[in-house]
Amino acid sequence: MKAVYIKDFGGAENLEIREVEDLPKPTGNQILVRVKASALNRADIVQRQGFYAAPKGYPERIPGLEFAGEVAEIGENVQNFKIGDRVFGITAGGGQAEFLLTEADTLAKIPEKLSFTEAAAVPEAFITAHDAIFTNGNLQENETLLIHAVGSGVGLAALQLAKAKNIKVLGTSRTAEKLEKCEEFGLYQGIITETKSINENPKIFAELIQHLTDGKGVDVILDLVGAIYFSANLESLALKGRLILVGLTGGRTAEFNLGMALMKRAKIIGTVLRSRSNAEKAEVTSKFITEVLPLFESGIIKPNVDRIFNFQEIRAAHEYLESNESFGKVVIAF
Image 1 (cartoon, rainbow, N blue to C red):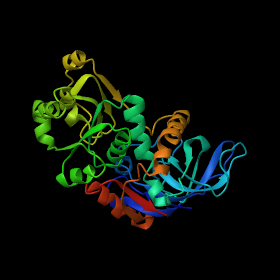
Image 2: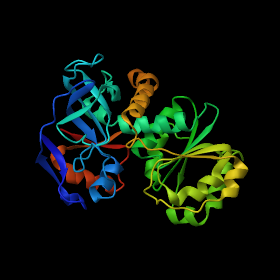
Image 3: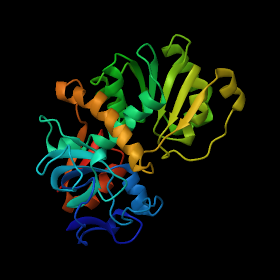
């Protein structure tokens, strides 16, 4: 089978399409999926650079954390899927290949109104966002959510999911253009951020948040950036606020004001999907099927597809995602 392959760790020029060994036939609860589309994530870039190794049991050189396709073969214990079903889901690697072997419990059926390329833009972004803000963050309808990098794939997913429950959402981005686009998805207030100013003057940022929330602060922060916003985040939290840490593009290490955290009785929660066990992934997928898929079926929320590249254009797709010009998901079509 053909697959996107990292021949050497480093820049996008090290990516190629290569014939790799065919996958074994599925057994037990396994399903072999014929992949029709995948989507790029920042993790794919970091893996390509050699800084994010795939978990044990997953290909080191074939990236891809989400996919959409058709059931090609099923194991003897599979009951809820049949050959030909349109499915999508998350994986810890290998999603950017013509075929993928996965567990049935981590798959969901694609809503009829979604194409394969639209469906490929959904799993990682919406499962991550839903798990972060509702399961980990316990976000409630009368609360306020702040999303850093709101124009990203996960950021837009979180924005849509929160607005589906009429939750007030604030969002940050480095460009006014992305914030304007987010207003179409229901963003209450956008904040243009300059990394240096927020890092050096967290109180200025917190004062703006206090003004926008009538002095209360925000109840939940979904931080898809990392260390550079940590101090500003603590300043901006409301009493009993929850800070959900997902991304690290803005650094891994930050000063921690313990007094501020204690005073606000804050909860600081880190989360990642990729390294979770199959059982944990099955659990978040089940919640996604129950609580999120109906919103796609009714049209309340929709996939956020920015651009679609043919898999032969994988280098250009990586370069585009790295440019930070994308608004939503970059999809790879097989």
